[in-house]
Length: 183
Image (cartoon, rainbow, N blue to C red; front, side, top):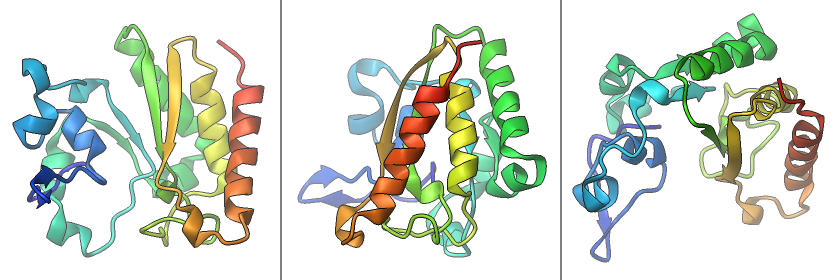
């Protein structure tokens, strides 16, 4: 979730867990989001956020109003279910294409998935998207010639003693990458 109300330190270091998007878009302590005076690293207008889902405690710890008032394009989990992953993926690509960027990066926190599909995360999502929806979103985004790369985070193998959930995630990633067609 992108905007924390407070930034904490641990052993004298700033804690950035869960705040990647906030820091990238210039929200947070200078030591993390303004290295060499480069704030913001990514303009909010160049961001598409897919799969947002809020829990009541999110409103206590995060500045939801600041995020909601930002120019970040949002397609919540409910919209992905209602409109379909393919339609939302196309809307995301249309926005990114219209920005005439040199390229874009895909950051995937797997806690965007429904907790039944991915419980091996620090905050299982009771209203997340399905593995099938994730595959459609990723395949379509990766098919863009502007897609520069993908990183995956949040998966915790200690919460997946059999490795089954990790294997399912890898299967989705492999299929999405291998079926992506530029265009």
